[in-house]
Length: 113
View 1 (cartoon, one colour):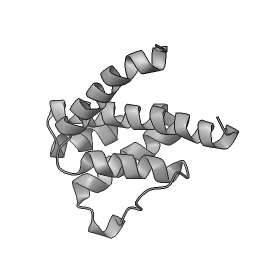
View 2: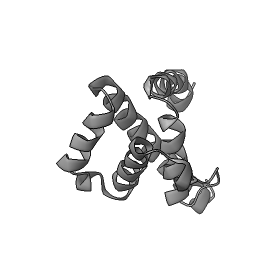
View 3: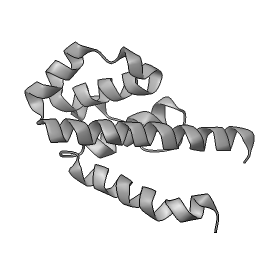
View 4: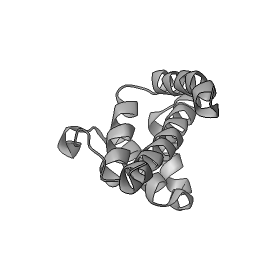
């Protein structure tokens, strides 16, 4: 059994738990935003349909994908106005997972592996 086959059930479980802990439709918004930024297929976001809290999540997800170090303290303060700490942590974990796995998918597609 390869390392990937061995870890897959554990990773899938973590991903499902992170998604379930995200409030509302934020997990889907994070996934859609991340895939769009990387040029991967998926549903496009209708920014007009987002409420202010969801727009903030999408803005932070975009910053996270482009440069995780550029997410600002002000953005986190704004998140705290809409979400509780466990929800914020779940969304950040979801961003990290989506960023990593979608970038691996992008590299795989670009290199044909």
